[in-house]
Length: 163
Ligand SMILES: [Zn+2]
Image 1 (tube, rainbow, N blue to C red):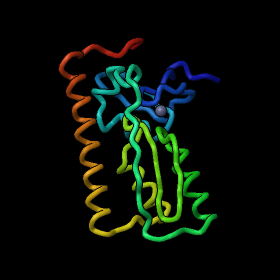
Image 2: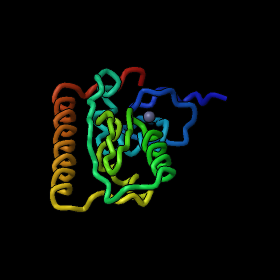
Image 3: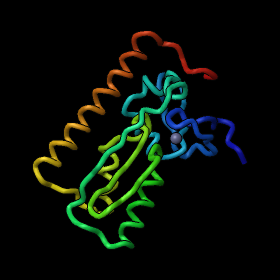
Image 4: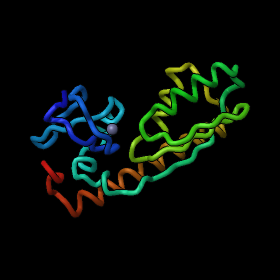
C-alpha cells in the first residue's frame, strides 16, 4: 500500500514509499527514502526544503583515501558493497591500500563516508599528510555546502513545489 503522504525524497529525488523517515520543517512534513537522506536534510533543511536539490546537477567529488593497511579480499568486498549502498555514492574502487570513492556532495559527504568506514572497522592512514588532506577535504565540502545554502536563502523563501 502506498502511503499518501509519501512522495519524492527531497534529498535524492527517489520515490518514497513509506513514512518511516520523516521530519517537520516550517510546518511541513518531509519524507525520506533513508536515514541517511533524513540526516542530510537536517544538516541543511533550508536548502533541501526549497526544492533546490531536485533542480541541481550533482556536485561530484572524487576522493582517494589511503587505508592504514591492505585488507583481505573478502573484507574489501564488504567495504565496497557497504559504501556503494550509501545514497549518493556513485563509484567505489579499491586497489591495494587505495580506496577511490566518487559521490554527489549534495547527498553524502566525506565525513559520512569516514563514519561508515569507522563502523566497518576500516582504519584510514593516520599519517600526518593523509589527515591534513582529509581535513582539508571535509572543510572545503562544508564551505561549498554553506555557499549553496546561502544562495538559496538569499533568493527564495517559498515553500517547495507541491507543498
Ligand atoms: Zn533519499
